[in-house]
Length: 247
Length: 139
Image (spheres, rainbow over the protein chains, first blue to last red):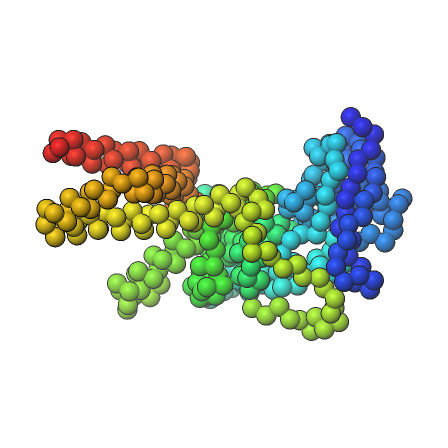
């Protein structure tokens, strides 16, 4: 294995250029280094002006998502040696506006997450004196997979529907809505369905399935959306067959 | 959902990459998706051919013979051959995607997706064999 590897990094400095450019850096190629380590090496030793987001370095915070050789990846989990001999192409996540270099604007994404009411909704909260809302391990199993999302937004970078229509609520937000819908303690499914059962919601999804493939936490947002579609369709048929029944 | 925030005006230089019309050529996964979607058109075409055949049967022996003659023409053979491939792609991908939408639980445990897809494929095979048996028996 060679001692070094080339990184072709997208630069975008809005004060001096109107379009992104590519800058190539040579960094050490160490077996235990991930792409994020190489970017930090560049920042510390070669070019302090390079901007990128990162925090935990262990696949928990979801900050360091970028496109590595065209694939949305957490750079803290993408080993350099897997891309040897290189060069490795590092780009900001697709489908998001680029603020600077590898930093993308995620304000709209966070707003989408908030819009699906990702918290437990009760018709009536029981008094604290009555204790907590209990749940069996089997009931927890129903939504556990969807609760593993770290909001890294790689699924949005992989989703062509979101790329073509930025208004699309998107994979992570819908999977998060399912996480609460399937929670036995929650009673807010009807509220969320009214938000998500329109064209920019679940029906915007054409089931490309790439969101599930790139998810570093195996949340399976594509599966969540298809399950949601089935529930919405069942609700629609029930309301049509039994208009007076209350869901 | 609005994409404009209070701070948007202070960032007039966000770079927004436009998605190319040919985005589906970027990646094999996207191309596969487009082929799967296009397969719907061939399903519709196959239905139209069958309906046309039934209609021609209702018009009398001569029209029916003429229609069957068209079915034997090279153009129809090539077209129907392509349609068959896409209809098969459509069916296989549809059944493979079924476990994503359908969650079945037996005894509190979730049935693995491969069994749900497998059951769909098995049912498809059985129905196809029954149809084949009916056709051979009558023929």
